[in-house]
Image 1 (cartoon, rainbow, N blue to C red):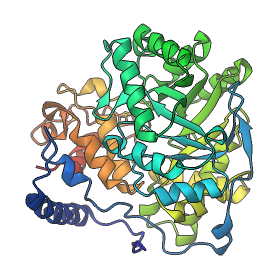
Image 2 (cartoon, rainbow, N blue to C red; image 1 turned 180 degrees about the vertical axis):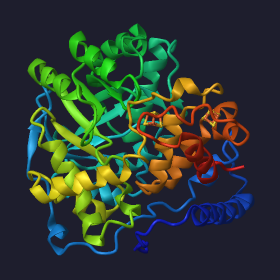
Image 3 (tube, rainbow, N blue to C red; image 1 turned 90 degrees about the vertical axis):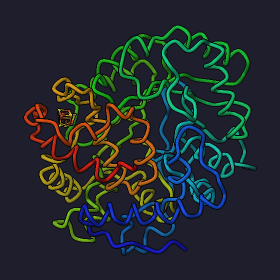
Image 4 (cartoon, rainbow, N blue to C red; image 1 turned 60 degrees about the horizontal axis):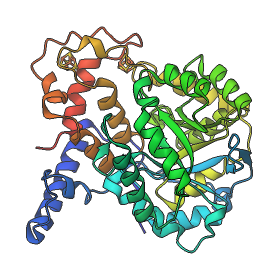
Length: 425
Ligand code: SF4
Ligand code: SF4
């Protein structure tokens, strides 16, 4: 059984030291096996890192048998999805999938670029033997090495999906998303849509969707809904954000487009806020889920799950409405993190950086590391940023970005701290 960690925030120096210690340990193991991944000397080491540094200390007894209590129509797909569904970023334990299946989860979201296809393989292992027709399996038009280039041919797109099928051990995907989409060119890419049509004809794909948590999120989602080409949209959505999204969700609902929410925990910094009591830390995810699900146009939400404990804790919010206490907790959280939380879909500071550092992405990876306990995912994602655009550029920079955030985030300081946290080399 994995040892529980304290939920207090480690100081930045402690985090970096701990990471380096684990890396040194991992590197020592690799040196004997000579198993470095081609083209990235750190990639294999990252797989050996511990994960989940932020598990709470106490679990409420009532959660131990929690299960899905509500299923909602996913647009016109004919599927009624579990209102709280399973995201696989960082997944490394097939037993957790089986537990979620036992508790009524029927919607699983994965991607080839989660842990270089490791998540797809583990999900495939977890669903083995379960009736396929009862499941809704979602992946992305993507490869283990990352997003397909915009000029990828239909054949390359088809091969990417066939790779997912093989790793998952299934004959078809219910849904494939155009992943982290930030432009209308990408959204309407004719090669992806041509490939999707051929995959549907071959019985390898049922529906097409789009996911986004990027600066042009509202523009992309508005166009996706109006285009009539998408069956599902998956959108970063959490309390007190994106005023126009509810209108887009309503229109999606009227047109039979399913709406799946992600990034619902708004950074999940509750685990590191000393102002929160242990009880509040435990209530926070459930309050956040209930808030999202109170929107009748949301079909369901996806949250990354990688422990039995998270299955118990998260599913306890299924079918529940937010209480006054939940809303008060969310408001307090919002006030505490507002000057610290980088909003998905914002990007207002990006043009201020002459080096083209993807500030929003880097800060999102720090959230994976600190808030979600997904150290391995965070380090892998950061390592994908080209060296000339990563946060190393910030060390000797006069920081024209410093006043560029309308929410008051001290961007340069955060980027320098992010480099300490995420850079390996
Ligand atoms: S740092 Fe501020 S301006 Fe930049 S993307 Fe995040 S929230 Fe937006
Ligand atoms: S401090 Fe970093 S993010 Fe800010 S402008 Fe300089 S290089 Fe860009």
